[in-house]
Length: 236
Image 1 (spheres, rainbow, N blue to C red):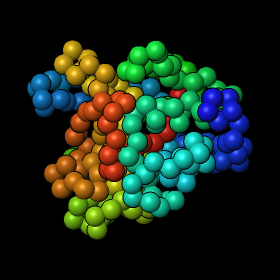
Image 2 (image 1 turned 180 degrees about the horizontal axis):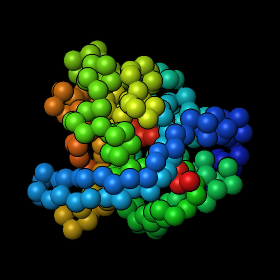
Image 3 (image 1 turned 90 degrees about the horizontal axis):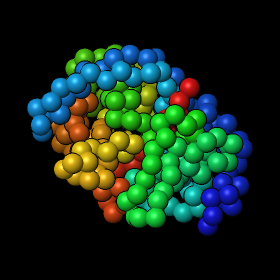
Image 4 (image 1 turned 120 degrees about the horizontal axis):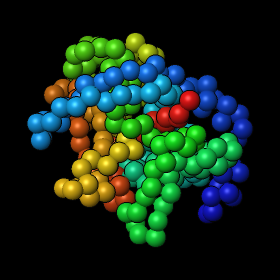
C-alpha cells in the first residue's frame, strides 16, 4: 500500500490524541558511557517532545492496518516489529499530519537516511531516550524497579498494558521494562554496520537488564522480537 493511501486512513482525532500525549522535555546535557569500549562522552540534548506512552497495538493497527505483535492486547505495546517498520509508522503519521517525514529509504534493504531536523514523527535518538528516561535522576533507575517496570520477576511472562506502572518525574511511563525501545541512531557503523540502538529493558529481562544505561543493538530490517517496541518523538 502506498504512503499517501495508507496515511489517508488515519483518523484526525487520533492525530490530535497523539499530539496531546507528547511531553515536552527541557534542554540539557547528559553524561553517557559505553562499557563495551570504555568510552565516556557528554551529549547536548535540545528541547524536544516524546510520547508519554509506548506505541500500543491499537494505535499501530489503526495507522498501518495490521498487527505484528506476538502477545496480543490492544493496549499492550506493539512488539515483534523491526526498526524499519517502526520508522515507516512514523513516516505515515507525518505524511497524514502534513509534516516532513524524518526517514528516507534507499534501494538497498539497509539503506536509510534520518533527517534529524525534519518536523515529523520519529524515534528518539539514544541521547534523547536516556535523558528523558532519567528525568533528572542520577541512579541506575528513576525509581524502585517493581514500582516502575514490568520485568521477569513480575511480568507473568508477558507484556502488560501500557501506563500501569509509576511514571518518571517527567510523566513518562514504561521507560524501563515492558518492552525494549528502538532508537534512531546507528550503534557503531565501523563494527556493526547499520545496526540500530535498543534501550530500556523488557518483560523477559532480569533486574540487572532493566537499568537506564543498558545499550543493545540489532539489525534494522531482520530483527524483531516479542520484547521490543518503540515510542514516538518530535522536534519542537
